[in-house]
Amino acid sequence: MAKAGHAYPQVEPGVAALMDSRVVSCAPGVPVARALVRARAAGATVVALGPGSAARVSELARAAAWGLDRRPVGEVAWRNLPSVAAGASEIDARRRLRAGASLILVRRGSRVIGVVDRDRAEVPPAESSVLAQLEQAAEERPLTSVRRWGSAGAIAGPPQVKASAGAIAGPPQVNNSARLWLLRVAGKIGEGLAAPTYAVGGFVRDLLTGAAPPDVDLVVEGDGVAFARRLAEEIGGTVLVHRSFGTASIEGGRAPAGAGLDGVVLGRVDVASARREHYPTAGALPEVEPADLLEDLRRRDFSVNAMALALAPDRFGRLLDPLGGQADVRRRRLRALHPLSFVEDPTRVFRAARYAGRLGFRPDAATLAAIRLAVERPGYAALSGQRLWREIELAAAEPRARQVFERLVRWKATSLWNIDGASSRHLAAAERLGRWAKSAGLVVDPAELSLLALTLGRPAEVVERGLDRLALAGEPRARIEAGALAGPLARRLEARRLPPSAVGELLEGAPEAAALAAWLRGGARARRRIQWYLAHGRAVRPRLTGRDLLALGVPGGPRVGAALGMLRRRRLDGGAGSLAEERELVKEWLTSGKEA
Image (cartoon, rainbow, N blue to C red; front, side, top):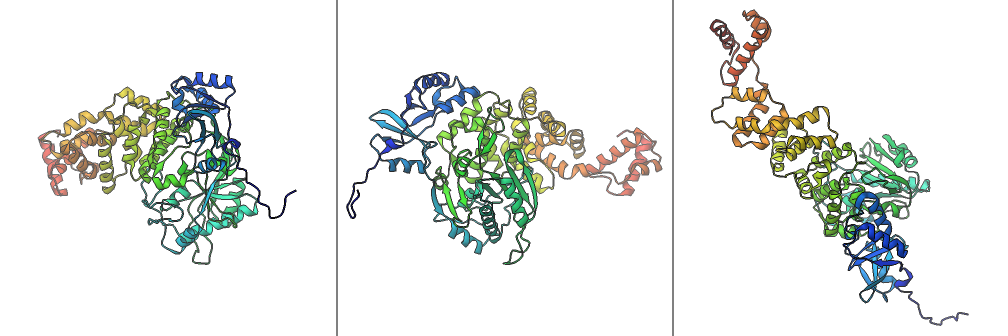
């Protein structure tokens, strides 16, 4: 029986309380298939590969099923894993798990005798509060200006934009008071539905970088669609439901009257049920099923996107960080959450390039190795061309689109759409051309322009394979294919003595995409001529109409077209400035019998 006031020794169970000893060792160069056979024969759950490297058997099984069975096991393993001595404390192991470690190697001397697996250990996520910063921001200027979220451990960075494809938009004007009101309302609705609700993903990441989160991303531990409909009753707007994924979006919601919020547009609100995902094949859309918040965060792409902000009234403003996202934000580091992340969803490669360009974060060595593994894997039959093209559109819409595509080229990610060996040398020119086109009021699709730059000079059969992979058809495909005319056209436009009328004839018979491609390939003289034609020359038309020409005695049929062409050439070269002058030219042309 315990005695009152008596001091009893506290027993620290040590790391053994969390350790799984079902570990087998293997050389990192052994093929995945052989390592898997060995692990299963030994009844192991983890394969240790040397200092700081290991792989779960379940991950090796996925790698083998996804066509990586002949790759060295070291390529699909976790890297830079922490290790502890067999006598380490349980507290030390839990601290490392809370910092984001996936596996902890337990060593006795140089030998790995077990692992602590984050997925098996019950470790509450690290928490901190950003409530004071949220409330302070609601009283100050909009989040479009850079802020430093001190106690949340954030860094200052450039304002962020969630741009739509085909356009580069400026930062939205966000009313922070309305945003704070929305978050509180969402938390109360979740409480009423017994469905804990969190702000997650890009919203939290952008908040910590001091940027303006353009939209609100919410995760509900429960029925996300029912929650979205209930929230829409409070804020209005239109609800778009994606039942198969348990997600919904609310567009056009507004804050209520009162407190200076009357009619403030709240922006888009995305709602999802907390879920786990299973990828049946590499590149396929995932199969989803309900899960808790922690599993939902673990399924995500990068640690900086795997944080959540609690919205329940009694926990409002608590930041949950189970995977070390805050530390990565401070370090400006982009870290994938598992080695097969880009194989299961290759579109994450594009996302990595976009985040690196927009946020200024650098992928760590393990993330770059995971990208390399994904792009070297041949073929992704389950990955549709439409999804790939959408990623190209999103990349082209980034404020730093050129840097995004340069990274994709450097990572050889263009092989995902069958453009092997793409060069980035035309991207800088495409960026300048896009800026000029915008200033001239021309509508140029940035995704098509970027793809044109990446395929310029490539053999026609390579371009065709790439366009087939992207499932491009109709006019978009025709515009890219027209780039094949760029070389000869650019050379002809470089000629020294070329009157404006001759420039017009060359470019009038070519598709606009061919003119743009010729601009990318041509020198300064060709570029000046193309810009002149696109901005001014192609709009030049005779003052006289076909009816006027018939009244002047021009025979109907082809002669009318020939006369109009003659007048246009004269105007391009600086002649025939008035109606009277055009009439005189037509009379001379009729009497001379010339066709030009």
